[in-house]
Length: 178
Image (cartoon, rainbow, N blue to C red; front, side, top):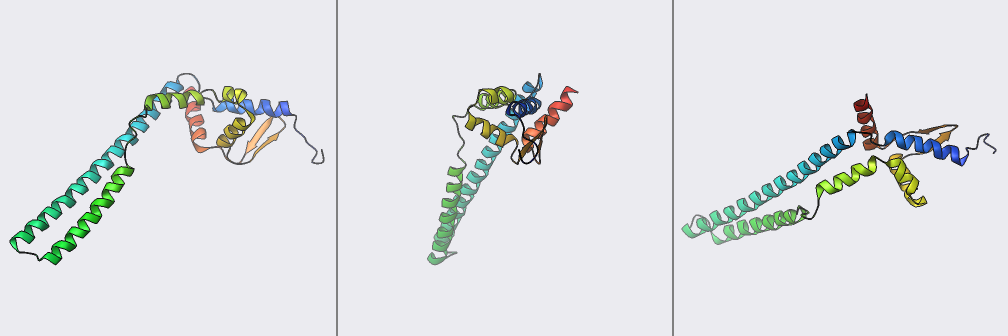
């Protein structure tokens, strides 16, 4: 080739497989990742439930404020125009909070453990996933691990950046393996 170097397909494939094996989870770290990810997802779900509780409390505060304004109107401390203004503001706030509550609706049919186990299982065998994938799936897999340009030079690959999650998992896995 004009550039002076043209990589053989098999050589590039072997280099890529070596890199994918490097990023695959090894041994007992698979179970540690499953447990850690499950805890993180459950905490995220718990945080969503806490957010729903806060929104419900705010809605209840607005209902109480409206009730207090109604009592003030009945005893004559405020006039009808003031009550109407308070009622309008409270109702608008209630509608807005209820919309946020609907958007924060938890997904009850999600089986966290199964999803986490499936994800970690796939991460533990990236090289096998690559071997059995279609061309489009291979591109997607490589693109998700190496989001920027991936270059092959003799028997090595180079990239300017590796997906931060995959890289963090690799570093943790390497430390755990010793």
